[in-house]
Structures are given as structure tokens and as C-alpha cells.
Image 1: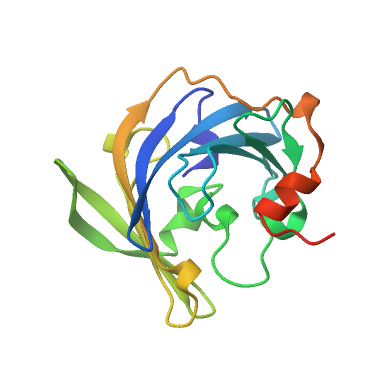
Image 2 (image 1 turned 120 degrees about the vertical axis):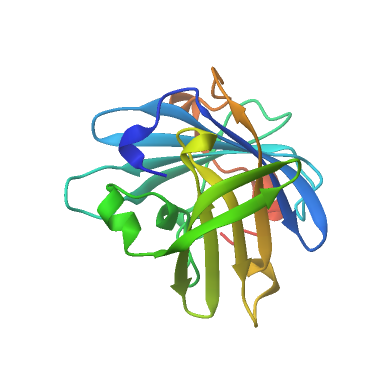
Length: 203
């Protein structure tokens, strides 16, 4: 989760549980430049949106400034080109955001520290640092350990009393190395009407 520690091709595999459905989730670094970091995620097809897809986000890195998403891209399996995601898909008005889990320094991350804890994931146990972030009614607890590579995420639990979509958990499964990105930003096109309907995006 420390933006400066990420290396291209490295990442982690997770199990995402939402509404009692387990979804395979891979998160890895697609590209790294001095002023930006591209993170790609691959979601299995057994989720709430039943499509096998990749999402890639470009994060702008600037000294002494919050890390923000500058672009989001989407590729649905079977489509020829990745598509440009409308900002409404990755810049929500409420709740904890994707960029809330990227920190430019350890001092910034330490503001959310709860304590050191023993965390169990399927088949593995880690000594991890517990952090908590809040936004509105959404509360996200997450546990970080240096044992699980550059991303460091061992477990994440999101809870909300009013929004079912904000109730989910993520657990570490295995490390990833030498992963080639599936999305090439230079080939990105405008989002198709087909995918707007799938992801319920209004024109």
C-alpha cells in the first residue's frame, strides 16, 4: 500500500466475499513512472456483475499531495479494446474510495493505526498491523503485513449499516510475480453502449 514501494508485475491474489459470493481478485502493478502508478485488478466472473473483467487505474503521485485517480480503464473478456471508465465509476460521492488505500508515506498510513494483531486467512496466519478508515457510515478495517509483498494487504473488512454494497471482505490468498497487464491504455476507446448497460452507467 505504500505507493513508492510498488514494482511492475508484482501483486497479490485475494478472495473477495460479497453477499455470500466468493470472487477471485488479483491486484498487481501494471506500470510505474516517476509521477504515476498504474494498478490493474482482475475480477472473476462469479460476482454480482457476472462478467470476467479487468480494471486499471492510473494514480497521480505528487509530493505532499493526496494520491488521486486520474484515469480508470475497463476490459471485459471478449471485447477487443479496453474502455475508458466514466469518473462516476471510480469517484463516488460517499464511502471509502480506492485511492484511500494508497499512501505516499508510512507517516500518512500511521494516522489510521489501531494495533498489532494476529490475523488468520485460509491456511495462513500473519502478525499484521491493523488500520481503520471511515467515510460516512462506511467503516473499513484492514490488516497489513510485510510478509505478503509490496501490496501488503492480508485482510480487509468493510461494513455499513445502510448500504449492502459496502459490506464485503477481502482475504489474501497468494503472491503474484511477473504479471503482464491485460489493459494497454493506448488502445482505450469510449465506453460502449453494451457495457454501459451492464454497469448501469447513464449517458
